[in-house]
Image (cartoon, rainbow, N blue to C red):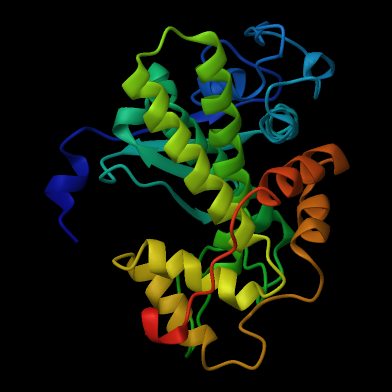
Length: 275
């Protein structure tokens, strides 16, 4: 661990309190996720009841509403751009995500949405399928921040859907060049295909896609190696949409993901591609 590199951008810990506090560390992301079709945004101090799902992103608005009812800790440090959710009640974001840095692009907002989904999973606190993180002495799993690649599948379903919706809104509301529009359309196609695979009938194939897309992620690799030796791959019974509902997402939000995914091309990821 390169402690000097971790600390070079400074380190800070803040608390995101319920509702939409003006100086909340992830308030910019919650506002961006919940923007309405009319263009109206949340405002600091808005009540939970003001967060509806007549939003450009039903998934993003749903996530904003869930976290406007929670108090969580947010740490900023130099992660190289990654996010980490090591245990219940805490997310770690790159130092560049402080303030408006977290809303510089649909991709950065999607990263926050991804990590917030992990927090919801941690709350389930079922040690095998939905570990709460923290310290857990085990001969086969990580002692700190244990997770599964199926947890990643659900978090990417949420994060990439939020990104898709924000890009779509950007295409209709911003003065973009033809090159920027073409780039956005390519990204939308990519996300549709990824969602089609992540939401497909074979959750193990979805887990393989996660590793194929991020082959250098040591956590995903460690998870895959362990899960490949288990009979169920640490994948709980039930569909992905059942589990998103269990995490607190509305039927409208889940249906929205399904609609986008239905427009993509599912990919089969062979084991030989990721071993």
